[in-house]
Length: 174
Image (cartoon, rainbow, N blue to C red):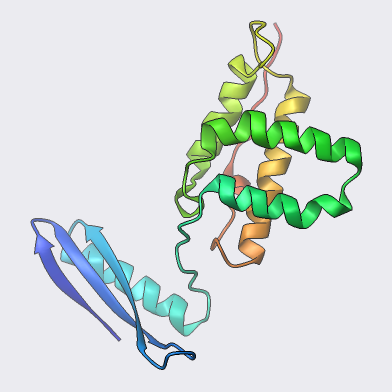
């Protein structure tokens, strides 16, 4: 179903047959480059083949987090109260987008979200005053990110939600 080709020192290209395109009738292939040993490349290839066979393979998306958040927000905002819409606008456009918006959604990892939340607790204020946001505010940021990423999984843009692997980050005033 697939094959591996050496590209250079410790570099391999995997090609996996993904069936035929129902519209064009042409063969679909999945290409992936792997750094490491041939054994590691074989493991990656087997994982892709397994997911294809079980219908769980999700094509990596080229969308950025900002682009997907905009789509999510358009889809859900009619169900939100005006005050919630205003609050989400601030969280998305003033906080999340400047720090994480350019990351491809398929490349977003728990460490990105963890770092974002920690940064917001430490020095996330936008009003020029020193200090970070409250625990409640940061929890709201996490909630928005989690909802966006759950929606991405539901629409099969992502295979799983990286936000569910994030530890709670709290600031303790001593």
